[in-house]
Amino acid sequence: MDNVVVLTGAGISAESGLRTFRDSDGLWEGYNIADVATPEAWDWNPALVQDFYNLRRKSVLEAKPNAAHYALAKLEKKYKVTIITQNIDDLHERAGSTEVVHLHGIITRSQSSKDPNLTYPIDGWELKMGELCELGSQLRAHVVWFGEAVPMIEKAAEICSKADIFMLIGSSLAVYPAAGLINLVAKDVPKYIVDPKIPAVYGLGPMIKIEEKATVGVPGLVESLLKSN
Ligand code: NAD
Image (cartoon, rainbow, N blue to C red; front, top):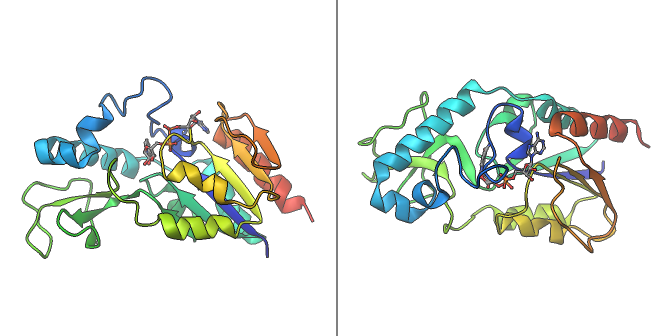
């Protein structure tokens, strides 16, 4: 069974109603990244950061997977599919994908602000100030902030190095170390990119650019892979 490795970014969830942040104004839902997605922001104003992620969580819980998420789940009929997502939503899982690596965490869980390895499910959308982990420290969203280590990057790197087919869907490739993963895929492996604004990538071997929105480009690509020999 061929190994399909898919790296997804915020663009795959855009048509589920979850906004990307680099497309329009360089802000995330009106916020400057430095004010809500860094350890310094948490030190400065934890209640604001908590509120920001509570609202993101509420939107995620209200959103539904779209045709692109469902198509990737269908690809498992014929291939061993591993999705490495930069997204903090759970739409791949809800669409039925079984192997999903969350590089930047998942917003439906909380984590200790003392030990990032301590994570917990969240009941509902709101994580309150005063809710504590077993070590007695405040619970925060289980997401990787800018400036924090990306614990899953080594596992993701190994997965990419074993790909027989690679796809990049809806990512501007502006956030590192995630953006560097495409360079770890073997040069002769076909690389499909689905994005209405294809990011600049050069010198990486066979590249098939599908300049479409995810809900159009991904189902079409999946159908052609399912039909191929
Ligand atoms: P990005 O915002 O930097 O880039 C989004 C990319 O998606 C762009 O290349 C854009 O052209 C493309 N795009 C827009 N609409 C699309 C569509 N309908 N179909 C396909 N592609 C489309 O996103 P990024 O590279 O993932 O980096 C953003 C970071 O922000 C991630 O690390 C993630 O953690 C976080 N984020 C997550 C979510 C989410 O979980 N849904 C949403 C916003 C931001």
